[in-house]
Amino acid sequence: MNTLSRRHFLSLSSIATASAIILPKISKANNPKEILGRKSGLVTGIPKPLRHKSIPNFLSTEQLALHFEAHYSGALRGYLAADKKIQNSTLIGSDAYGATQRARAHKGNSVLLHEVYFKGMTIEPDSPSLMLRQAIEKRFGSMEKWSEDFQACAKSASGWAVLAIHSLSGKLYNVVCDKHATGLPWMSTPLIALDVYEHAYYVDYKNNKADYIKKFMPHISWSVVSQTYMLTKVS
Image (cartoon, rainbow, N blue to C red; front, side, top):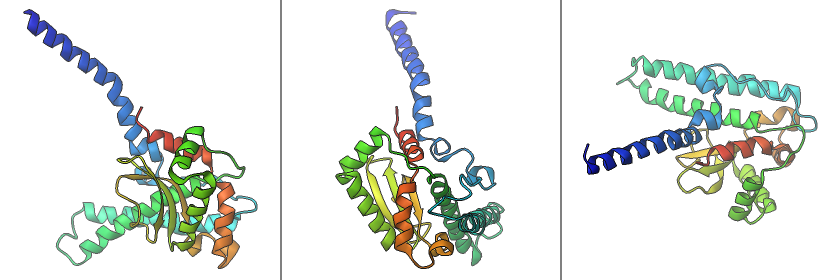
């Protein structure tokens, strides 16, 4: 092996070694299963169990159970049914094909947002990590201003209010989602999802949406949100 070839070989070996060390970290950080959970119903086909059966002074057992079974589990069943129809390719060219495609996206996003919602609530108040707090303060000016903006999104939304981080810009966004499949920027990850459809609060709050939104805020599981935020960051 001449000197040039040896240098070339050593250079390639160094790159390969570095890639073996660095790329798995990048892959893991950007892996949706790592960010949003390996036990997602979208992965297993089985609903994730409720983190809390009730949240005292916020949501009752009846409210959470109804929401979980009828809307989250129901969305998963709908997603799996639509996906199976499309995979079997029996609808291509038919009038039902487009409707089934839209149903799959609608139901699949509903599953994901419900999982973020249920996992992201806690009984005991906690605090965001220093890194997440600094990111929120940089983007919104302060935690208080973020909270005001998020609640304004929730009050104006007919479906969801979401705090999301965009994977390209790295910016945080409070987003109004009027339907499961619309509102969030492409390539963004939901950090906090607040369901403001009436089914999420009607048992406990009737039509008092504003009170439900206000009481949600102290029950955000910032430890869960901070963990998700960290996983979106490439080491």
